[in-house]
Length: 145
Image 1 (tube, one colour):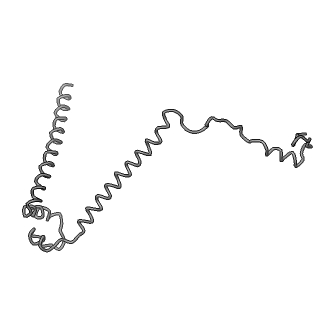
Image 2 (cartoon, helix red, strand yellow):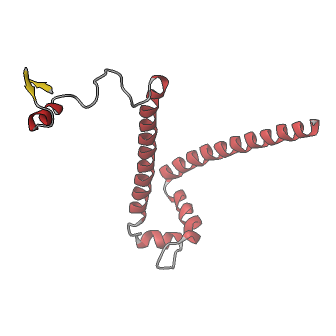
């Protein structure tokens, strides 16, 4: 027999089966059984930050490409075609040099273009120099072996 609110309940009765539902199924504890403790807890925010930054960079690159594609899709005037000597209906990669030479017709753009080309040239020269320096160091190390 079990006790239900102070009164004895016969074994096997419906009232005894209801008594079972008044107990907790699992004993309550304050400890967590799942999850990572200690140093591992910082990994989740780091992963979220990394994925967010990667998504932002990817979005920025796609946006940049879309802006360039939008500008490139605009029609080119007949004045520019005539000045560059373009006879084809579509401007292609082969027309790049003739279009770049038009920069000399616009002095402010020419100055800007020269400044940009100077910066790019110095950048490439430094990269090539660093690459050659690493190759020389690697060759000297191989010769020393």
